[in-house]
Length: 304
Image (cartoon, rainbow, N blue to C red; front, side):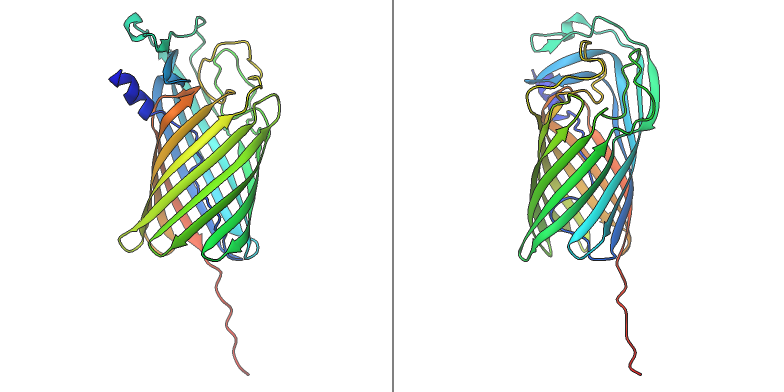
């Protein structure tokens, strides 16, 4: 029981660890980041409710992602993410029958091939418009994610780097910030094509300034699929990898650190873990990013 609870507490989450909330960039300001995220190899999935599904092979998941924000006006910010994924399935791992207790499931009956796949993830493009910018900030978001994986799905390995569907995600965020802390709440729906279940998403985050410029933050995220939908193209097969299948749900927390090196350059570090999950790998999601930001220089006038 203690072992199971420990695994549940470190369930990885598929969380986008970029800047969120209702705050927009000023016109001409920008932010770019390159980050790497990894879930160490593991042959277990979390299954609702607090159960474990064993796999025949350990699955490794790594992402390198370029993310950018740019202020088109003082109230509207455009942002985008370009992920490149590396996923692999290792050698066969024998599951001892003593590990398969009443709260867990044995591995799939079919043993698929080991393999490696490098491809694009789901490219995302979004906009954020700020309606209210006083003590309380309020913004509307609109995001589109595209099925941008280039290579065809290989049923012999069941490896994927992206959902093979479009996603259209409207959301609202409300937040409050002052010199030494900030907090915000964001919620919305992700409407998906190709028989994938629609999703309700929510994110709450609170952060504090540590020292002169660094910040420490705690985030709580939830993704819940609505009933219905089928995993295409292998809806009749057993879950073999937990990579971009339908009905992936979780409630997860993330610890974040924002560490400026200068006024323009800094580091982002993160560690994500799950409180509850379904069809999600049981392993921590570790992230490290380097960012660069800039402000538009004010024009000066000279009296003639």
